[in-house]
Length: 307
Picture 1 (cartoon, rainbow, N blue to C red):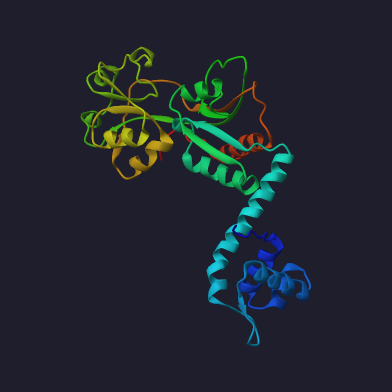
Picture 2 (spheres, rainbow, N blue to C red; picture 1 turned 90 degrees about the vertical axis):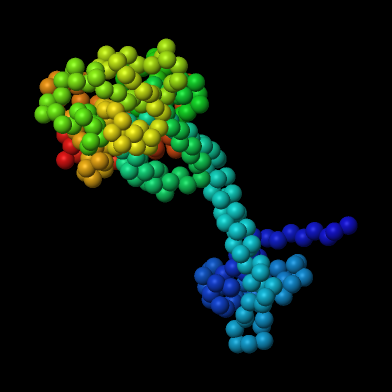
């Protein structure tokens, strides 16, 4: 039967520190241990593995070929031990193991969301986060069904009774078309002008019965992907009412044009809400995420017109 041996984390820690610092004495100082203790841990590791990890014939110990071969694995194991300890402490403190966030991209600038997530990760790095693309009402549906812990959505006039929400910011919408679209040649765009051209809309559903009502065009295409949506717009295929944070880069490079309408399509700016269900109590990580998104968005200047 193959013999088994137990490698203690302290042995790997002493081995890695000595390899990194170049001496047992320096390793001992970095670990806050006596040099004899570090030397003993490394010697025991060599006995347990049956390998010579350091050549001690010179003034300072040098890694052998066997030692170099094992160093990467030792560091990987030490990282695993650290993650295990951190996650154990987090679970004991009631921290969630994972969070799922449903995001309607029209409701939040992804740069702002990323800044929020960076601050969140610095404090809750052990929490696994899943980000779901959820256009329109599908984010609220995912939260309602328990498939997402938090939703980031455009504000709704009425939420289910078992929902909690927090208003965290604003986002503006503009009516745009590709730079070569016929509508861009008009000094002023009226409702009848829109009727004559294809309207592109973002929708999470492929069921025609559930599509949002629209009386601004006789021709409507529904898309789930904003990347395809913007590609089609810049190519001149249709017009759209688009979140400014998504349209702005394309406006600035001249690929799409803001249309000058003689009517106000809908009040703006829209509010951005964070939503979650009262059926599932948010833990420290979920509450921190809400706070970070609120902090970042509240610090942003509300813009209602393109620059």
